[in-house]
Image (tube, rainbow, N blue to C red; front, side, top):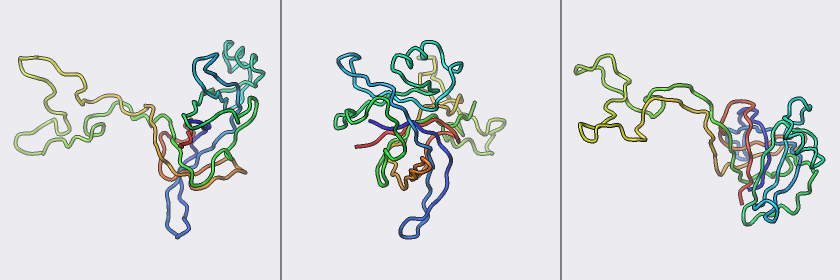
Length: 210
């Protein structure tokens, strides 16, 4: 799916045509520079490589500087590839061009990919929505515990995948079928209905849906 690289600005609310309030997430979409294209003949797959946030040379590794120099491109902090779907074509996107928020239109549907907020080490009540134990009938010191996790003498081990306490969040998350409510071309912003992963200034990938 073709799309753009952007950053989450935050959430707000707007009113639709019927005067009904609607929660929206504001995303700074682009500008993204088209560095190069991947082709089946040369690379084994079709893709468009985009660069986001131009930086100075000392903030880019030597191998990446060589890559940018090879394609006569400025240096960028973030580089991502977008693969077109079977019904999308990338031939209309020229190498060296810049893609901005006008790549999207209102009432279009997109998929937003980003890292969810990190919650650190969390117990089973917060992480897996366990109910915990009633504070009665002999229960003490473990009101928010996970209960039994293992087997008896046979097979005498804990199976893989048992819901337990552990690291929560900070994982790659995709939210599909989000409708673009408004596009602000002048400021390079798009507003999608609902929430997207991550905190403010989280890097996100905005994929077009077909």
